[in-house]
Structure formats: C-alpha cells, structure tokens
View 1 (cartoon, rainbow, N blue to C red):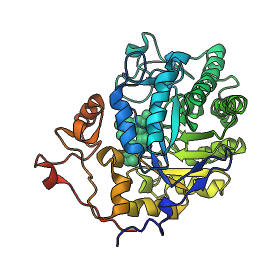
View 2 (cartoon, rainbow, N blue to C red):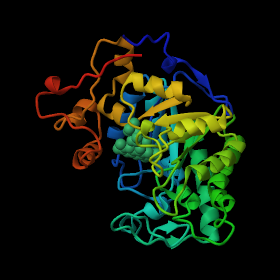
View 3 (cartoon, helix red, strand yellow):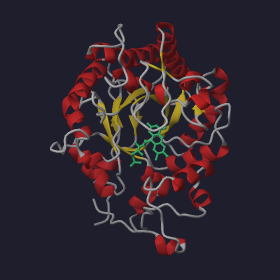
Length: 391
Ligand SMILES: Cc1cc2nc3c(=O)[nH]c(=O)nc-3n(C[C@H](O)[C@H](O)[C@H](O)COP(=O)(O)O)c2cc1C
C-alpha cells in the first residue's frame, strides 16, 4: 500500500506547548555533525547545501552540534556559535533550512571530556578527572565553579545568537556522552560540591543550562522560539545512567517546560542497553512518563515510512532521521509520491556530489565500517535497495 499523505500521522502538524511554535509535520532531520566547517567554526557552502537539500519536506531540521565556547570544541570541522562574529555564518544555514520551509533549530553543545586535547591544546574540561571509557581518551581536568558558571552563560549566549541569526529554536545537546550528560552521569561526575553526589545535584547543571537558555529566550526573542533538550536515556558504564535515573531527570526537565525531549538512541526499537529483558523502546517509556506535558522525539535506525509511523503509534510525537536522510535527501518527496524506491545505502563513489554530502563527512562515513550501509560497486541504479513504502 502506498503511503497516503492525507491519512498518515507523519504529515500532520503539531504546535509545541511551551513556545507556541508550530511544525508542519512530524519528520525531523536529526542533528548531524558534518566535520566540514572552516577552522574558525564558520559554516562552509558544502554544509549549507547538505542542509538545504534535506530541509525540503521535513517539519524541522536540527543542525550539527555547534560549540558554545571554545573549550567545548569536540571535533575538527565543528560549527562554532561561541562569538557574535559567527552570526552571519549561522544565519546562512538558517536561511538554507527556511528555503525548504522547515523550522531551523540550532543544536548547542559542549563536548566536555570528549574534546580531544589535540584540538584544545590543553586537557579537556569535565565534571571530574575521569576519562571516557574509550581507547586513547584524554584525562580531563575538573571544571572550576567559575568555569561551570561561564559555560552555563555560554549556552545562553549561543541561544541569543540563534535568535539574532533567524533560527526558530535551539536544541540543547544533553546526550551522546557530552558535557551535560557527563554532569548527570555517576561515571563521569564524582564531584562532592553542589554539582555532584546526589541525583538532584548531578541534574543541577543540565537544568541550569535549560533555565539559562529559557531566560535568554524570554528576554530576547519576542517571537515564538522553541527550546528542546536531547538526552541519552542510559549508559552502559557501571556506575552509569540508568533508565530510572533518566526518568527523574525527565521530571526535572519537564518542570521547566521545554518544547521537546529528544531521546537519543541508535536503534529506536532496540530496548535497554543495560537490561536485555527490557525490550521497550526508551523513547516510548519516556513519552509515557511525560504524558503530553512536552513533545517527545524518537530516533534511531528509522529508514522506512512504515517504521516512522510505528514510532508515532508508540507514543513519541515526532520522528527524527539522520542516516536515512544522508542516503536519501529526497525521502519525503519520494514517500509522498510513492512511486520511486528509497535509497538505503551510501554510494561508495561520487556520493558526495550526487547526494550533497560534504566531502570530509562522506570520507568519514566511508571510513567507519558499519556506520552506514554501503552500496555495492555496481552502477548506481542497480545497487539501490528498494524498501516497501507501506503505511
Ligand atoms: C554523521 C553523523 C553525525 C552526527 N552528529 C550528531 C550531532 O552533531 N549531534 C547529535 O546530537 N547527534 C549526532 N549524530 C547522531 C544522530 O543525530 C542520530 O541520533 C543517530 O545517527 C541515530 O539516528 P539515525 O539512525 O536516524 O541516523 C550524528 C550521526 C551521524 C550519522
């Protein structure tokens, strides 16, 4: 059965409760770092083109993670929103997204202990002196009270720049092991001051960042401006964040009334990373817990419209897609037209030109086995895998 845009929930609008921002449908371009900005953090034409092509059709497009302060610099080629000089560059990305009639959402970020010392020129800053559990991880230096306050303010300043640059909102990156998650994590955070110890103290930094961003938006936006928060529901470390911890963090966040919580998982349907017996999608559990007090975005390995529909039927209000839209920038058009196969693999040659993927991002994706399915080396037409377009 072909998908019918008039009967599927995927193409129904939604108004976020807090900021009164309306989104035309439930499809979200997931935030994706493109590793391709200039050394000063300004955005390159290839990155603009990547966004322009993918913003057509989705309700909102979340940008690559943008560092709010230079000691939060986590990757080569990362966007910067750490100074007012970045505003014209940030504005060019917002305009490209608006050309596709999607909401433009700037993801604001600090890498914490995952910022390589080779980029920073000094040890990374983090809640405590505990390196990430990955080979070659740098040993971080615990942040001082002044650095914590400075970083909270930097998130607010980045939100102000997003307002000036014409964005419709920001997403606070509290997921994927970066600084905000590190504060909440019993693995990364061993502090004994007001920012560590009890669950409430570990949640204090993420909540302080959300409140600062909200205050800045109240004082500066004078128009609907959405604020979302992305979190990772579990960590595999011991000690590490459990789902029960996250449900408490969620209560703290929801009390501040963000527009959405974006539950970052690699595979939406995979269930718990910590308990094999618990197969419930993490975003479904969180959607149940928030009971419509805020919107919830589900994400992870969603390729087909049928899978996207299944996520919405499960409880989340929106579906984000990353790799699916890297491989198939025309996803929404093809799904609504219903007569063309969706590309579900990355061409091994020429994909950067064909699909408007910045060359450095393309090389990275080709160089990391298993990250994206690669097309066989047959000519393009022969290697496209067709997936059924069913509602
Ligand atoms: C190339 C690439 C870059 C990414 N960069 C970010 C990022 O900047 N911020 C973020 O929160 N997640 C980032 N992610 C994670 C995605 O947003 C998404 O959660 C993940 O890829 C799973 O969804 P998918 O299967 O639809 O791709 C990135 C993923 C990819 C593939």
